[in-house]
Image (cartoon, rainbow, N blue to C red; front, side, top):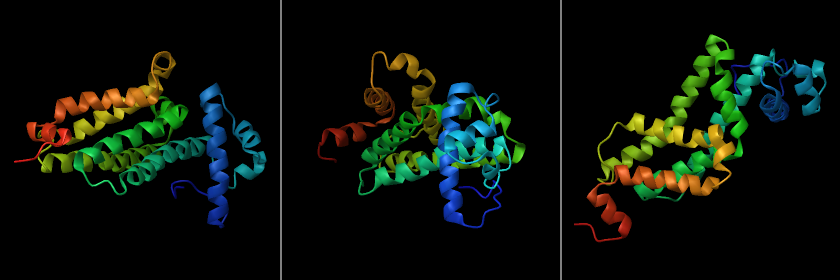
Length: 216
């Protein structure tokens, strides 16, 4: 995890392992009790480390929050490229990227909610770092859109705005899952969202391509 967070331990593998424990515990507790009501001692107890030891890996509760938010962004950066492996068709790459993004949100809804509620609790430097990581992960989506436009399959649109609309679609599952889960699944939610995006963005050439018609 990030060099934005100080550790007094030199063993990088140990630091990574301990921080993963801390992130898992903090995500659960922040989701249950909120960031401000959760203590570092409670996080340490759930993570299975002593309250004193935890300060070898982070300096503050804000550091823990930073690591939680960073871990979600790292999940996008890891899972989207994995989903795109061996997928060459531009439209299918776009769909695979959207599905992967939504899958990460579905796996970690509490951490996604934390990003909305508590990013403001970080210091200025850590907020800036999170925003830069967000922009970097969004590029995984914008590249897919740009490639589909270049192939003539998508209309010429504001690519960054389209990418953020996809982000909001995915985050919407975490924000309103209490209701959505009553009548749909994450997979159905994702596919309906994709259908809306494709209907809005596909060109006649793109529609023909998706139907498997011979391109002129």
